[in-house]
Image (cartoon, rainbow over all chains, first blue to last red; front, side):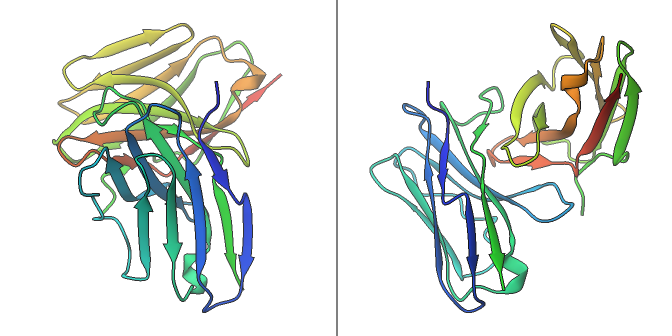
Length: 115
Length: 112
C-alpha cells in the first residue's frame, strides 16, 4: 500500500520568503508527526496531531513555524520569513495512533534550502 | 541536552560478522525504544522496538537488548549483509509526550 507522501521533495527559496510543505499520511493513520533533520544531526521533533485533539506544538522552534491538519488527513507545515538556519530535511511520519508500541512510518522528506 | 546518544558516528563490519550498534539515554520517562534504518535521500524505516519492561526483543537477524540500570540499549545484526549498510538511528518514545527523541545516528558499512 501507499506510504507517507511528502511534497515537494526539494525546495530552494530565498531568505525571507514563506514556504509550505505538504504531507499525506498513510490512510487510516490518526497520528501525524513533523520532524526536521539538520546536517549531521538526528531528527528533531516539531509537532504532532492526534485525531481531532489540539496539536502538541512544543517542538516548534519559533512562531514563524506553524502547521495544520485538514480533515484529519493531509498536513501542511508553513515557515514564514525563512532564515538560513531553517535549511534542513523536513520529515513527516504517521502511525495508526499515538503510543510507543505504534511505530511511526516516515516519508522521504522535503529538503529545504534557504539561500 | 542530548537525551539519546549514539557515541559512535560510524562502524565498519565485515560481511557475515555481527554488527553491534549502541545507544545511551538519560530520561527515565522513555517507555519504548526503537531502531530505524535510513538510506540516503529516503526517510527512516522502522526496524525493531522494545518496551522498557523487556530486556530483549528479536526479529530475524535483528535483536535489541535493553539494560535499564545502565540506561543502555544495543542493536545486534547477525549475520551482517551488504544491504545493511545505512545510517541507524536509535529513538526513544517519551511516555505522555508521544514524541520520539532521536540519537545522532551511526553510519554502518558492511564490507564484502
